Length: 128
Ligand SMILES: [Zn+2]
View 1 (tube, helix red, strand yellow):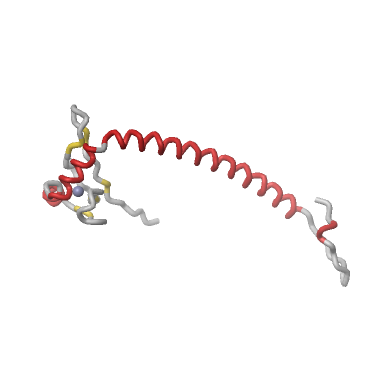
View 2: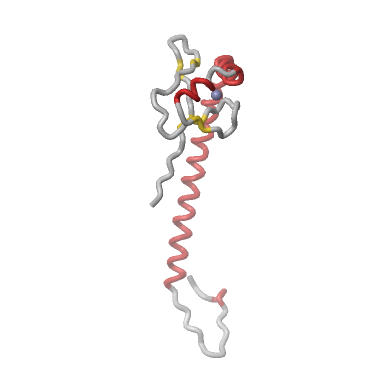
């Protein structure tokens, strides 16, 4: 069995004042992707390359935007929690439907219909 190793997704730290701040990881073992958008899907494979990246203008602007929209993240988090709760309820209801359908299917499969030669069977008349 092959095990695919995915690169880490970079996440800046939050300093004592609650601001996002860059902090290059101590080790980059399987590469790291940065969500700042400077280079889409680019994997930085060394600490040195990543340190060069986090000083580029687009990355610095991304950190600044994170700090400017901190309250929006809080609001967005609340909305996402509500969405997750609703989706869990939907999944729970669908799981119950699937369980019922599986039970009905097993019951129907257990019924054996013995066809009578040259005689049609009206499936609607079968009592299940
Ligand atoms: Zn970046």
